[in-house]
Length: 155
Picture (cartoon, one colour):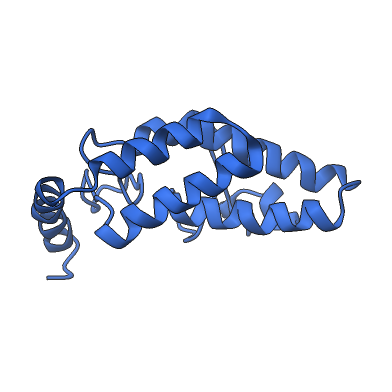
């Protein structure tokens, strides 16, 4: 559990943002803030809570992560699609939309979080992202994704 309590700069996996502690999938000098990675981290922490419900440290890590996700989730909504991450590095594209696979993964993960926590914000964004998943928005997403991949030299 110690890595969840430490910032990335000290060997941990947490980026302490204005929204709260964000558990990173990719640790880097500049926070990457990958949505599916944060949710997968919360899944692992939740499993620990279920096995050791009396452990106050893991309960706090889980609760803090859920609160961060509630606070930051609106930032992942492009209005027509979800973002893959919120990386703010100078060399990184301003907008990096999720691929279709990640859009659908976000939906599944948010439904799961709603079932685990009962928090309506997760259901709201799962439904919103599901409504956004159509051919017109996918075409728009791929136009932006192409530009993003070009900027980081992957095309």
